[in-house]
Image 1 (cartoon, rainbow, N blue to C red):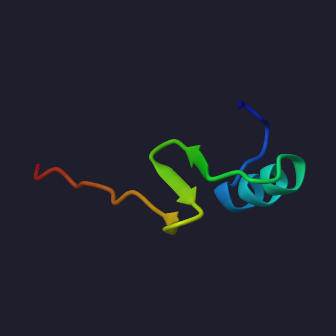
Image 2: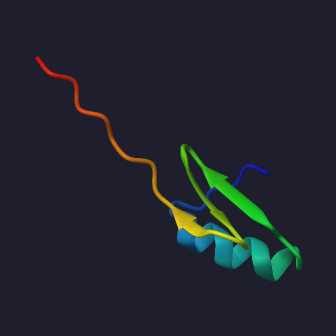
Image 3: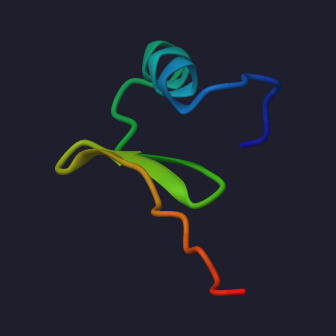
Length: 48
């Protein structure tokens, strides 16, 4: 589902209220699941 919510935390809160039983929310490479909680992707820095 696409929405105009700017943060993953706000999206999780909104979607859990709107759709009880949500098990996973993704925003880019970051995600939240009922089992793991929040997971932020690590940024990779390239050597110049």
